[in-house]
Amino acid sequence: MSTTADASSGSSPGLRVCVDLNLCQAYAQCCYAAPRSFRIEGHEALIYDPAPAARDRADIERARVACPVQAIRVEDPERGA
Amino acid sequence: MASGPTVERVIVAGAGLAALRGAEAMREAGFSGPLTIVGDEPYRPYDRPPLSKHVLTGETPADATTLPSSLGADVAWILGSAATRLDRAARTLHLADGRALPYDRLLIATGTRARPWPNPHEGRLSGVFTLRGRDDAAALRAALAARPRRVLVIGGGFIGCEVASLCRQLGLRATLVESGPTLLSRVLGSAVGGFIGAIHEGRGVDLRCGSEVEWLEGEDGRLVRAHLTDGTRIEADVAVIALGALRNTEWLDGSGLSADPGGVDCDAVGYVLDRDGQPDLRIAAAGDVARFPHPLYGGRRAALEHWSHAVAQGIHAGRLLAGVKPEAPYGALPTFWSTQGDVVVKSAGLTTGADAVAFTQGEPGSGRFVAVYGREGRCVAAVSVDSARWLPAHAELVATAAPFPPHGAAADRPARGITILAPGFA
Image (cartoon, rainbow over all chains, first blue to last red; front, side):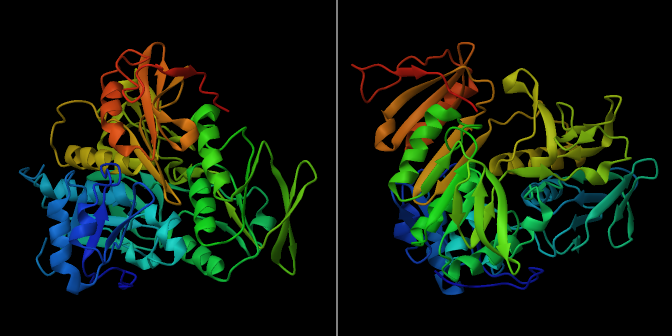
């Protein structure tokens, strides 16, 4: 996972990901779509990178769309999402 | 209000998850006027759950937790300056830096802070931490990275469980001291808490339930050991105080609003109440700090410290302040998750006041199960441990207040039926 950091005021963040883990049921589709940014530990503990690198943009979008419970929210300044 | 004749000014007091989602909801509801968000920390809204999890492992930097947001450049941020006083007569919010901000609509979302160790001198020892904010997590991460000999976790609630299990993942010795009979006994009861404790003990957490730390001993300003009330000493160079949270309501003293350390009171719609019980139609509250009557629980007042609640109530309050008439009182089903090492505990509903608990799926002793809580013959909550896919069906039982014990449960072992126990709340 990346170690992207933003300025303390958050003035110019890169990709931002937030997963609603209430919804997540560990179907792990995100892990296949974006293996650098999502993984499952144990039976169902989703670990993800909240600030993925720009090179993973396409993977992250695939993960967002692939989530069966639509638990992944992405902010992408490049796309104005 | 967006179509009103005058431009109204909205202030959001607080800059956490509820504040952010509330502000977004105002914009999405069409409010286009001046919007200012005030926060005591110098950061844009960030996500707290990772702070007690992979931020502590070092995998995620604390500053990578900034939340995704749809807010644009038409929002003013005043960060690093807390709200200190509310003058409702003058409709002015006063800040720690001396500024006074006029408002027409105000969203109160000032959240909570960690309950400190009761002895301030001991609490200031180097090596003693609380965990609530981003800076707390970064400091504790640095301490864990220095490979302490032993980490002492004081308090066996969700944060305490998360920190202790995470220390084991890092290969650190961890002792957890909890005054109740089991982990999580206040929230989940000792029947369920005992099984969760067994999971953590199996992974090497040194669990001391029914014990209390009497004092923390320092040498040259550094923590060296803890003394329990039974005389036991625990050598530890890091202690994490995980004794729950205090609601940030002191700044409302003198405002005339009904507020105390348990939260600021709201009506069923979401407006805050004054001391006479009258709503202030310019002010709503959301998130950890808002105490409101929950329609699913007979109007019992509750202030919920849940991530999903901060989102749902933030959105509700934002729309309310933007002039959208709510279709119904706010009453989202409370849901919660806790990742403890690689164990996931989830819940739906509120266990408060439950008089029975039934294990309806799985085997508690195996570490994977679902428990349903009943109160007066109705399902009021469900908890899953490493069994999240079973939870939505059980949440439906709770949302509809289905009869307890639930019919058709224990689908995986129909011949045995279900076991019903007293919850055993501490």
